[in-house]
Image (tube, rainbow, N blue to C red; front, top):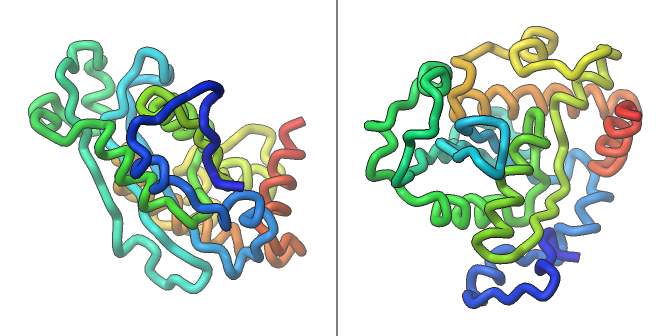
Amino acid sequence: MPWFRAAPNGQNSDKLECQAFSDAHYGSAAWDLPLTEADYFVIDIETSGYSPQTDLVLSVASLQTSWHSNKPALEICHDLVGHADLSRVPQHIWTLTGLTPEILRGQAAWRDILLNTLKRAQSRVWVAHHARHELAFLQKSTRDFWRLQLRPIVVDTALVAQALTGSSTVPVLEEVCSWFDVPLGARHRADEDVKMTAMVWMKEAQLCKALGLTTVGQVVEWTLAGQH
């Protein structure tokens, strides 16, 4: 099973782009991969709000890592997203992210950035903190651009941390960094957040393995079970 499905009755005029997403090995097979053998794709996005329907992706950062990676954040890909109209972005978002309309002016279009991001994710298990936010925006854009349903295997480091600690609430990234002794960088900067998320996951994976959770699927099922 590939990690995308064609949308119902959808036609994609660019077959090369479709093929770039296709990887039959990393569909259902990723579920049973040992944590120690999986390759991971860690992603973080900054947006103008919480709604994929009305808000914009302003920046995206990602990195590739594995169980044996001693320095998972060495090759961060950080893209700023250009938009024709940024008037809807609230002022507090500019303050929070450190971005400005001037910084984003003339940057690459989101469609091109997303395509390159998905290519980097190929053959990898995804990792994100509060992954539902990332996936909602990425899935909507993938449907809009190529009529594809994006369905990667995703580990949510926030849910893993909640399960490991028994917390009654889903923790924010700075809380998890404090719990697992991960250096805290500048928050709400995609390149900094993705680095922290990668380091958090490396520590969480070790703890999960110590509990007897040896595969990607076991970790995902365990964390989701705690949400019911």
